[in-house]
Length: 206
Image 1 (cartoon, rainbow, N blue to C red):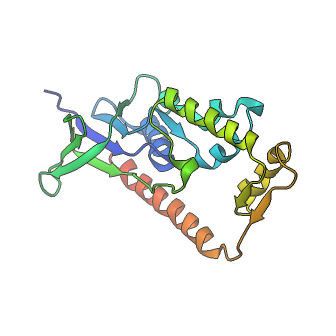
Image 2 (image 1 turned 60 degrees about the vertical axis):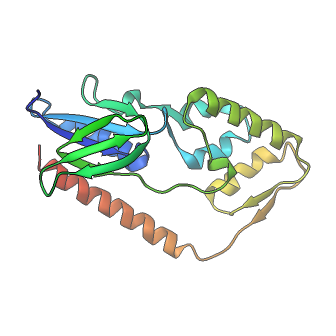
Image 3 (image 1 turned 45 degrees about the horizontal axis):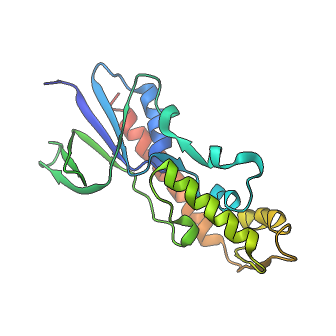
């Protein structure tokens, strides 16, 4: 049985993936093993998906749906695809185990939860496999190509940036926008601050 401490990160979104990329560069793998658990085969950059489903130009799907291959330093860290159903702790500072949907148990000494939030809306409901994602993207492109009118909810960078690609399909995209983005900006800044604090704490384990 390995005497190494087991560090497990649950969630392969922006926080989990970026943290894994940074942390595995610093970690002493003679003392620790590192595992990232995520339910998807690929990392999904959700803001980019909105433009991806509009046009095949630039083959954005190759960059918006990214392989986890480059998350870790080669030979350091491991990826496990699965959906977490339960976490069992053995007590304070005693570790525990993460239980996956298929019944597999993943032991941890240090656990990082980076599950984030679920985006709402049809275009955010992507399946977990590359093959299924390609089908969804192609299906949405056909729907948009066949549409006579389209309403864009939000006049921010993503909404406005998407409009030039819609013009080829319809005469004028309808943009629905609201003011008052202060709360959203505040929450974004806070999430960055908390991420760096977490990184600093775990870095002290190295």
